[in-house]
Image (cartoon, rainbow, N blue to C red; front, side, top):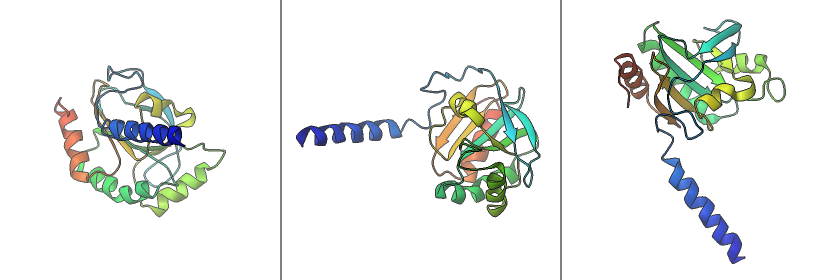
Length: 180
Protein backbone atom coordinates (compact mmCIF):
# COMPACT_ATOMS: atom_id res chain seq x y z
CA UNK A 1 0.00 0.00 0.00
CA UNK A 2 2.81 2.45 0.82
CA UNK A 3 4.41 1.84 -2.57
CA UNK A 4 1.16 2.84 -4.32
CA UNK A 5 0.95 5.98 -2.20
CA UNK A 6 4.55 6.84 -3.05
CA UNK A 7 4.00 6.26 -6.78
CA UNK A 8 0.81 8.33 -6.66
CA UNK A 9 2.64 11.16 -4.92
CA UNK A 10 5.48 11.10 -7.46
CA UNK A 11 3.00 11.12 -10.35
CA UNK A 12 1.08 13.98 -8.78
CA UNK A 13 4.24 16.01 -8.16
CA UNK A 14 5.38 15.42 -11.74
CA UNK A 15 2.02 16.62 -13.05
CA UNK A 16 2.15 19.76 -10.90
CA UNK A 17 5.77 20.44 -11.87
CA UNK A 18 5.10 20.14 -15.59
CA UNK A 19 1.70 21.88 -15.62
CA UNK A 20 3.36 25.28 -15.64
CA UNK A 21 5.33 24.41 -18.77
CA UNK A 22 2.41 24.70 -21.19
CA UNK A 23 3.30 28.27 -22.10
CA UNK A 24 6.90 27.59 -23.09
CA UNK A 25 7.99 28.68 -26.54
CA UNK A 26 9.06 25.69 -28.60
CA UNK A 27 8.28 22.14 -27.71
CA UNK A 28 9.33 19.60 -25.17
CA UNK A 29 8.75 17.01 -27.89
CA UNK A 30 11.57 18.23 -30.10
CA UNK A 31 10.20 21.34 -31.83
CA UNK A 32 12.48 24.11 -30.70
CA UNK A 33 10.45 26.72 -32.56
CA UNK A 34 12.92 26.65 -35.45
CA UNK A 35 10.31 26.94 -38.19
CA UNK A 36 10.11 23.21 -38.88
CA UNK A 37 8.04 21.92 -41.78
CA UNK A 38 4.47 22.97 -42.30
CA UNK A 39 1.65 20.44 -42.02
CA UNK A 40 -1.30 20.00 -44.39
CA UNK A 41 -4.61 19.93 -42.56
CA UNK A 42 -8.01 18.90 -43.93
CA UNK A 43 -10.56 21.68 -43.55
CA UNK A 44 -14.25 21.03 -42.89
CA UNK A 45 -17.28 22.49 -44.67
CA UNK A 46 -18.78 24.64 -41.88
CA UNK A 47 -19.57 28.34 -41.31
CA UNK A 48 -16.44 30.34 -42.21
CA UNK A 49 -14.71 27.20 -43.44
CA UNK A 50 -14.63 25.41 -46.79
CA UNK A 51 -13.89 21.73 -47.35
CA UNK A 52 -10.37 21.27 -48.66
CA UNK A 53 -6.90 21.60 -47.18
CA UNK A 54 -4.67 24.29 -45.74
CA UNK A 55 -0.99 24.38 -44.91
CA UNK A 56 -0.10 25.31 -41.31
CA UNK A 57 1.70 27.52 -40.65
CA UNK A 58 1.36 29.55 -43.80
CA UNK A 59 4.74 30.98 -44.75
CA UNK A 60 5.08 34.73 -44.34
CA UNK A 61 1.95 35.15 -42.21
CA UNK A 62 1.25 35.07 -38.52
CA UNK A 63 -0.70 31.91 -37.73
CA UNK A 64 -3.07 31.31 -34.83
CA UNK A 65 -4.20 27.73 -34.17
CA UNK A 66 -6.62 26.64 -31.44
CA UNK A 67 -6.67 22.88 -30.77
CA UNK A 68 -10.04 21.67 -29.47
CA UNK A 69 -12.21 18.58 -29.02
CA UNK A 70 -15.95 18.36 -29.50
CA UNK A 71 -16.16 16.51 -26.18
CA UNK A 72 -14.31 19.21 -24.21
CA UNK A 73 -16.54 21.57 -22.18
CA UNK A 74 -13.67 24.04 -21.67
CA UNK A 75 -13.17 24.13 -25.47
CA UNK A 76 -16.87 24.88 -25.92
CA UNK A 77 -16.70 27.71 -23.37
CA UNK A 78 -13.52 29.05 -24.99
CA UNK A 79 -15.19 29.39 -28.43
CA UNK A 80 -16.67 32.83 -27.64
CA UNK A 81 -13.22 34.03 -26.53
CA UNK A 82 -11.59 32.76 -29.73
CA UNK A 83 -14.44 34.33 -31.77
CA UNK A 84 -13.81 37.67 -30.06
CA UNK A 85 -10.08 37.45 -30.89
CA UNK A 86 -10.88 36.47 -34.47
CA UNK A 87 -13.04 39.56 -34.83
CA UNK A 88 -10.15 41.78 -33.71
CA UNK A 89 -7.37 40.52 -36.00
CA UNK A 90 -6.99 41.28 -39.67
CA UNK A 91 -7.15 38.97 -42.63
CA UNK A 92 -3.36 38.89 -42.77
CA UNK A 93 -3.45 36.33 -39.92
CA UNK A 94 -3.99 32.66 -40.70
CA UNK A 95 -6.66 31.79 -38.12
CA UNK A 96 -7.69 28.16 -37.63
CA UNK A 97 -9.23 25.83 -35.08
CA UNK A 98 -8.29 22.16 -35.32
CA UNK A 99 -9.52 18.95 -33.74
CA UNK A 100 -7.20 15.99 -33.33
CA UNK A 101 -10.05 13.66 -32.47
CA UNK A 102 -10.08 10.38 -34.42
CA UNK A 103 -12.41 11.58 -37.17
CA UNK A 104 -13.99 8.61 -38.87
CA UNK A 105 -13.83 6.49 -35.72
CA UNK A 106 -15.53 8.24 -32.80
CA UNK A 107 -16.55 11.47 -34.51
CA UNK A 108 -17.32 12.36 -38.12
CA UNK A 109 -16.62 15.54 -40.08
CA UNK A 110 -20.40 16.11 -39.94
CA UNK A 111 -20.17 15.95 -36.12
CA UNK A 112 -17.35 18.50 -36.17
CA UNK A 113 -19.37 20.78 -38.49
CA UNK A 114 -22.47 20.46 -36.28
CA UNK A 115 -20.41 21.28 -33.16
CA UNK A 116 -18.96 24.26 -35.05
CA UNK A 117 -22.47 25.55 -35.85
CA UNK A 118 -23.66 24.97 -32.26
CA UNK A 119 -20.73 27.03 -30.91
CA UNK A 120 -20.89 29.87 -33.47
CA UNK A 121 -17.59 29.14 -35.21
CA UNK A 122 -17.05 31.41 -38.22
CA UNK A 123 -13.42 30.94 -39.19
CA UNK A 124 -11.70 27.90 -40.77
CA UNK A 125 -11.94 24.63 -38.87
CA UNK A 126 -9.80 21.60 -39.61
CA UNK A 127 -9.10 17.99 -38.76
CA UNK A 128 -5.61 16.96 -37.70
CA UNK A 129 -5.80 13.43 -39.08
CA UNK A 130 -2.84 11.51 -37.71
CA UNK A 131 -2.11 14.32 -35.19
CA UNK A 132 0.85 15.62 -37.20
CA UNK A 133 -0.05 19.24 -36.40
CA UNK A 134 -0.59 18.51 -32.71
CA UNK A 135 2.85 16.85 -32.60
CA UNK A 136 4.39 19.78 -34.51
CA UNK A 137 3.11 22.23 -31.88
CA UNK A 138 3.22 19.92 -28.83
CA UNK A 139 -0.53 20.27 -28.34
CA UNK A 140 -1.05 17.34 -26.00
CA UNK A 141 -4.08 18.83 -24.22
CA UNK A 142 -7.12 20.83 -25.28
CA UNK A 143 -7.74 23.63 -25.56
CA UNK A 144 -4.26 24.67 -26.64
CA UNK A 145 -3.65 27.95 -28.46
CA UNK A 146 -0.51 28.50 -30.54
CA UNK A 147 0.78 31.63 -32.28
CA UNK A 148 3.41 31.24 -34.97
CA UNK A 149 5.37 34.16 -36.42
CA UNK A 150 5.76 34.81 -40.15
CA UNK A 151 9.11 32.99 -40.01
CA UNK A 152 7.44 29.77 -38.76
CA UNK A 153 8.70 30.08 -35.19
CA UNK A 154 6.31 29.46 -32.31
CA UNK A 155 6.04 32.72 -30.36
CA UNK A 156 3.36 31.70 -27.84
CA UNK A 157 1.63 28.55 -26.64
CA UNK A 158 -1.02 28.28 -23.95
CA UNK A 159 -3.10 25.37 -22.70
CA UNK A 160 -6.41 25.99 -20.94
CA UNK A 161 -8.55 29.08 -20.65
CA UNK A 162 -7.24 32.40 -21.86
CA UNK A 163 -8.67 35.76 -22.84
CA UNK A 164 -9.32 37.32 -26.22
CA UNK A 165 -7.09 40.20 -25.15
CA UNK A 166 -4.18 37.83 -24.53
CA UNK A 167 -4.67 36.04 -27.87
CA UNK A 168 -4.82 39.35 -29.77
CA UNK A 169 -1.80 40.68 -27.87
CA UNK A 170 0.26 37.60 -28.73
CA UNK A 171 -0.81 37.75 -32.40
CA UNK A 172 0.17 41.43 -32.58
CA UNK A 173 3.50 40.74 -30.87
CA UNK A 174 4.25 38.00 -33.42
CA UNK A 175 3.23 40.33 -36.25
CA UNK A 176 5.60 42.98 -34.87
CA UNK A 177 8.46 40.48 -34.66
CA UNK A 178 8.24 39.71 -30.96
CA UNK A 179 6.26 37.33 -28.86
CA UNK A 180 6.45 36.25 -25.26
